[in-house]
Amino acid sequence: MFYDGLLQGRYVDLRSVEEGDAEFTLEIRQDPEFTRFLPRIENTLEQQKNWIQHQRNKEGDYFFVVQNKAGERIGTIGLFDVTDTQCEGGRLAIRGNPLESIEAQFLSFQFAFEKLHLQEVINYIYMENERALRFSMLFGGVFVDMGTEAVVKDGHICRKTVNTKQAFEGISHKISKMLYRQHQRKEKQDGNK
Image: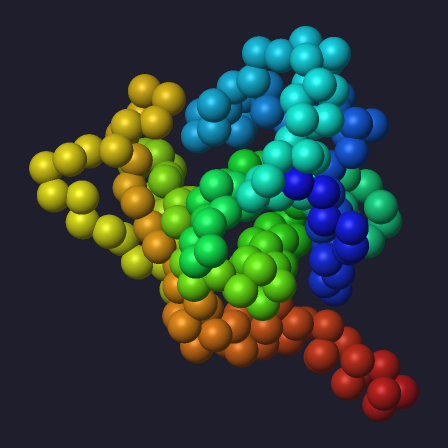
């Protein structure tokens, strides 16, 4: 689904994917660094362009390109299967530094909870992707006990995590302080000169 706006942060911006991003989105999803934990896309460039055209019109499916402040594309992130109260988060593949990665996720949660007015963002994270599991917890994610039912996606056993609007509201101030502390220090230093 096309979002006609820019989600702006201090380090990165998120914008809806465009057909001109086909080569970038295909390349990042074929990068071995990311395909360990995300399904590898085997599309041709033309198929990827067609997928983007379809996705931009697909109800309840938001796919963003993450750009640094120099305008360089550094990753992707998405929210999909949007209902009245929840969605699934994913498609997170970012080559940026930790602040850029955290801010991209922060902006996507702000979009889900403040613009779409959802109550939950659900993620299915490969069990072996410990970094992503910790990343989800940073934003207040909690693990859902699936009992004896394992969730298998793309041949991988996954942990289901849920990030709620309430938890995000409770933790967003802490994340903002962490994200923007360096920038605030620099502003203070510049003001003291």
